[in-house]
Length: 99
Image (cartoon, rainbow, N blue to C red):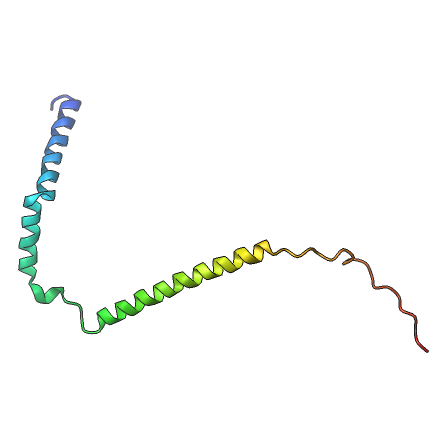
């Protein structure tokens, strides 16, 4: 075993070269080879799934719009603070009986 820094630098350089190869043209070629082995039929979604996904996307958009409207209504209500009645804790005034 060599010194710690030399071993670290060697491992770091080997890792960088490997990462460069996998992210570069070698990695692309490997990905294309894997895709050709899988075949085009296996990548298709079952019938009706795309329509369902579109429906889910539309519902998600509607939910986002409703959340924005709810937040707007909450902000409006928070700004609209009515003052409490001044004599809320006092008993009612006596009324003369008619008779």
